[in-house]
Length: 264
Length: 277
Image (cartoon, helix red, strand yellow):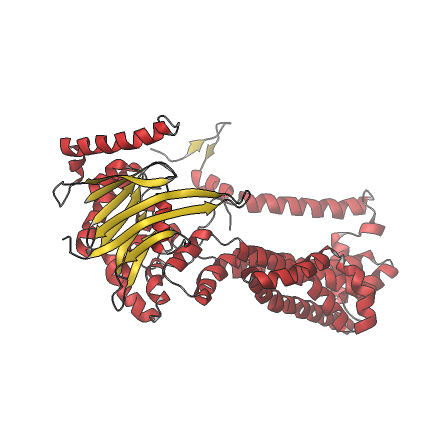
């Protein structure tokens, strides 16, 4: 379902944090150039602290003062250019599932009634029908991330940014959520930029895996994943999958060794 | 199979009964502590172990209370003290919460307020009482002002702190959805500051009561503090302690009210494990 338009184009993106105590600039991203065609699912993997989350925040507009250019598709009439699924649910604990999911729409100035009416089908889509009036603490970690995903999807973003959304889940829930995400993605037909440090997660979900270097980050390799879709979880045990995982792991391992973190 | 159990001494104990004592342990031990103390006080006083002259005894305090409530002057005192407390505390709430939210949200407001907050909060405000009495007089207004000053700082300081410690993640979520500053304030800052405000409200009750009592003891013509002072001058410890008891009850009622308010505003929080109703 890859289209001809480009959903995200980054040219020469470079970013440094200013250390507040020494006022030195710590370079987080050396240079990122990438292009994501519309409809593609792309993962960004790399060692901890390589700047992958930083890049996502730049795309999402949470960080400014970067060098280089970011180009996104213009949003549709009642949509957004981008929406973010945050790490650890980050649902507002004081709002019910329904209020959380309709939050983005209300930020765009939609009435509460209309926003909630538009949120309902998405709550159903992520498998949370019947849980609309629950508060986040009443949901399991996996369900919280479903709500988080629905919240991002309601604003009909041109690109969905996902920042290690399953990092806090236990291994089994994580696998289930990966499969669920693919099901939802096939229905929602969104361009996705997915950040993870789990290689098998990246391969299983993506059309392309971008491997980043250790800090300061740059893209080391752009690896296409040619596994057929729809993908079942057992695809993770096929030789093609394992070969891809080995290849990516070797790239990352060189980075870890080069930075004195053997086996980290 | 029988559901009864044998306890260590071999007696049969019904599990249901055991469960009731377990689940009410907190209440039972609490009651035991209070009743035990009252019994010790009462009989200690009668036996001469505790000085009745200084400390009176529970039944004497109740008797003094029964006499007191039949005097019309008493109700005038109650009305005056309650008015001072409610007006002072209420004024503090109305001013401290909005100001605290503003000061936490707008850095410049905080910069402007900070020196005053630090100065006035470090100042033992009771020391201002003589000045206040000179300026405002012996009437209710001086006591309202003292109660207000006590509660105001107790409420505004945690409120500012609450706004300033709002979880970064929630602010990021709101920003990433393009929420306006007004919306961020209403949907993120205000709800996450509630626990801090509640802490301030709870502290404020005690501070306002201290203000009322000290104000009335120092300079007043009417109020429960005046009644306590007269009772003290006449060495009527039972009557004196009845007055103290009334202030305590006011505080308890207030704290309970705050607890209910908190329960309503915090219904999105998990009920803490092990907390007995």
